[in-house]
Image 1: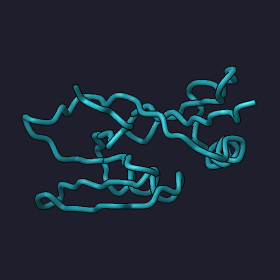
Image 2: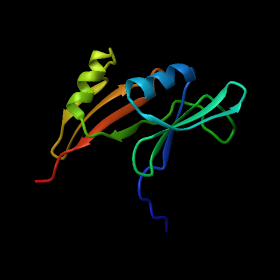
Image 3: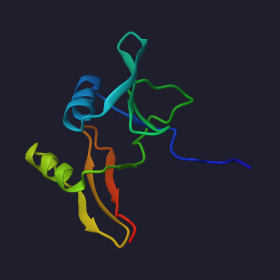
Length: 126
């Protein structure tokens, strides 16, 4: 039986690596943990999102990788209100939420390629 402990990485296929790097690195403030040119002009970039998890972006396609629209991923954050305000100020559309649930706050945005990205903060336990 597998013992899953979290997300190792999620992959988003992008059409413009420079634009995606700006969005994930500059706007969202994620730190690059790997930046590899697989072949001329074809990139694999990973961002550290805490713990053992990473978010990968790539414009590389192969039969082993699904090049269709990527599934969404939720990133756990610690500054929900500040993040929401900063993204709005940067002109990033909120596509779902903001939502208030008994155990968390959550909202969604899209990256420049239309991939869903959920931002989530667990509430402190009472």
